[in-house]
Length: 278
Image (cartoon, rainbow, N blue to C red; front, side, top):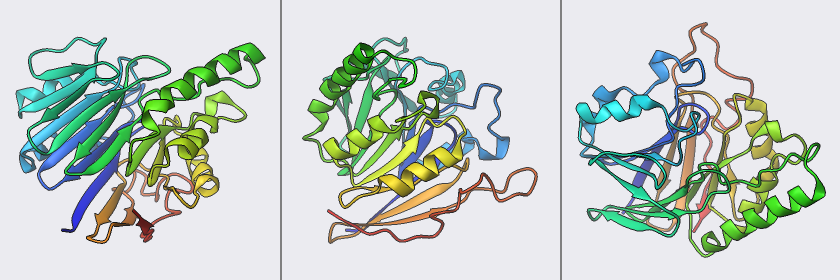
């Protein structure tokens, strides 16, 4: 049976994934100065189009958790899935690395480790496996860290990848943080080589669209397609056909307030078909 998954990028590490009447929302954030434009934000009125809504919060850093999301349950029956070190009311589930939980028959979640606060999430939605890394990354600052610090960070990151290396992943959201300077993409490249997701979408690039676009150009390989989504409210539609292929189409979101097309390079993959064999 063919299935169509719609992925929407909002800002930084914030994405949603919609399949039929199920909606997953990951690490939604409006920005340090709430700069995400009104017409590019999630409109809770749209929740009426879904029977199940899950909000994932990987950790409590402000750039991964906007308090606005905690108000959504007043309008619709939202389920929150959060890191074990975060407070939550009765409408959700805390998860620590190694935990697994099922919500009905369509959504299954596993929590994995992070190399910063919180956890990373692997969500199985009707057999489509979606990974959101949160702040899991090879966190090093090549120009500032000592050799010992870099080696320690690399060992910690590699340990965190071990449980993931045997997990099939269709779509992964993973950090490429330009603040790290040289080799900022070392974590994402290692993740691609070790875990081999079918599709990787870079995130956490702090508004530096060129960072994500250039990474996508260089990092794609035989096992993993890489697509940069850098324009807020841009969407990616993935068709999963009966033969195990993914057909990927990317389109921009609404025009910006000044009428411009968006950030430089944001349409590099516009309206492209990128079949990836299972």
